[in-house]
Length: 241
Image (cartoon, rainbow, N blue to C red; front, top):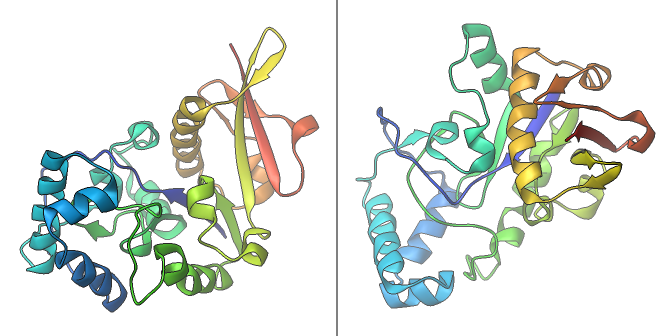
């Protein structure tokens, strides 16, 4: 069975329905560390302005005090990729999503797409230490262990998230690349990639993809698999514009 990994997003949109919030011991250690920081310290840590730092201070204190509501991660995140992921799913599509799609988080670790999380702002570039480790080092063993239990990982991650995994673990991933063909010139950039990741994931869920070979048959939002540019550990999808 294939397992798809996707990144978090900075932008969030609060869904209508909330759920109880729970933290693992590893996540609690991060919140404990951050809850001791003042808004000014958070601002320097995040490299954000005073009003944004004050907002984040409030979020962290709410999580720390167990008063923060939680929402399904895939509904809470509202970055460009997430806006291109189909949300209204059939029962079978929802089951596939729950079993096959996981989000890589710097606060929660690797979580199922619908795992309830609190509103927060944190990524692996944030300059904080937990148990004298960077966030990447802090999570590396857990991330590596997750992969060890899976048959095949399909990575829709940026380098920021892939670098949390050990180098030898990353070599096991099948990476997906998206390109646009404009008058014979192949181009890629973050906007193309983010939109295409969401559309790709939607197609994967809708077609109940179970194998690497069936990935090659996918067509979505004008993209199709291009064998000439693809290799064993990287599939390339192209769209003519």
